[in-house]
Length: 152
Image (cartoon, rainbow, N blue to C red; front, side, top):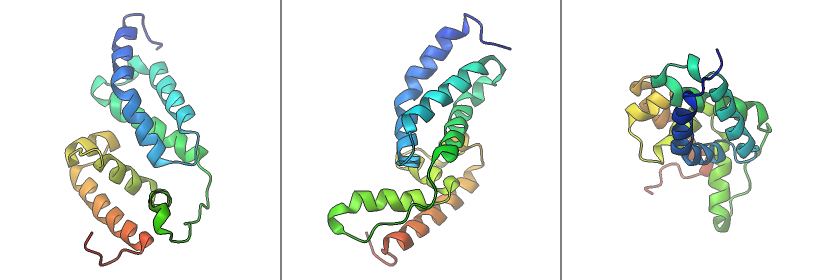
């Protein structure tokens, strides 16, 4: 079923509400991919299936679409740079990119101060799974950044 004209207003509001957050999410999830194109394509795919998507799952579907597109378009084998305190943001992004996608997504969403329930909704999982992913992601980031045992 294709979108109806009366769907345009609802989709336009959805787009306006989600566009910047999704762009930021995509940029952090996969800094080496063309995240702007992935966001565009995720909205396009969501629009094409708009009438068939349960309204309570549209946001989750959008995030699933962009995660799928980024996974398809992200170069593999990105190595971590040598440690250089002057380039800490780049090092952090590289470490974040090295995390498995489901852990990276949970951690990126947590940086927006979303609670476990909100993250679970976006990722299509249970809040307990979000907590587990966050613990593992934090541990892996400390290991990747060589900050194991640091207090900060």
